[in-house]
Length: 304
Image (cartoon, rainbow, N blue to C red; front, side):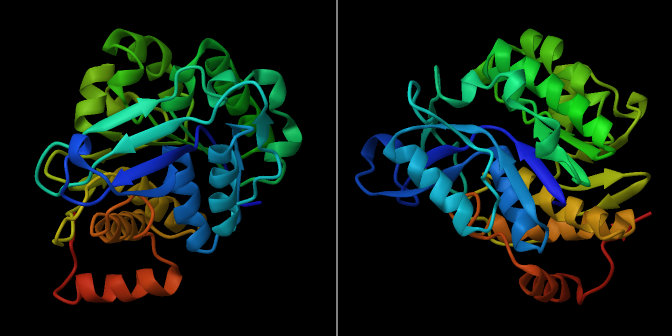
């Protein structure tokens, strides 16, 4: 197993593009979740991925697991909870106005994640373990489970990747600073936006691991390198950060230099924002290679 991710995968009901949520009558079913987005991106790029998490014993949970398995993601350790529901996310989709996102995840099966559910077997042989700040913000027990997972990853010798993925609907800034900021210092690779670093009051230069910073102008950089965003028509910006992480981590897993990792991350993100949901645009290896050839034929876009 190359990669292990852990987090909440919810059922996403996405309104027809361009229609405000309160006016929408047609919805498309999909999966939503920062960690499952990264899992899908890495699986399509050829990396074996295991998803750890919990869903309810309900139609939404069955649907989520079926869609994860359809992407080739290993869900054998998923917990199906007969006493709590699968989280639900409703949102609309528009390229140039604020997107309305409604979460129904309080008391969800995922929020009942506990440390004793995570075992060394689940990360045995993993080269990379990826988590986000969303999971520890779901509940006290999910926070403890995240700490347990990081311990297991370190014991297994896996690289730890962390994205704070700040969602203020899960808690105020001071709670994010208290619970999530310390986790960034335990990671080997951290993905974070300028706004997230400011909110969490974290200096990326002070992190012990590699800091990959996503800037407000949509560029990203690390280790003195900077990658501009590829110019594409945007259909829906949601999921771009997870797509970037998947592309970057794929490069790392293949031993590529950071400039290649940045370029591939930017290319995967550019493909995802051209589609309405979080995962439709995630490419396979051949698709990414074709996109990179088209995006870079005018020249190199990493500036030293």
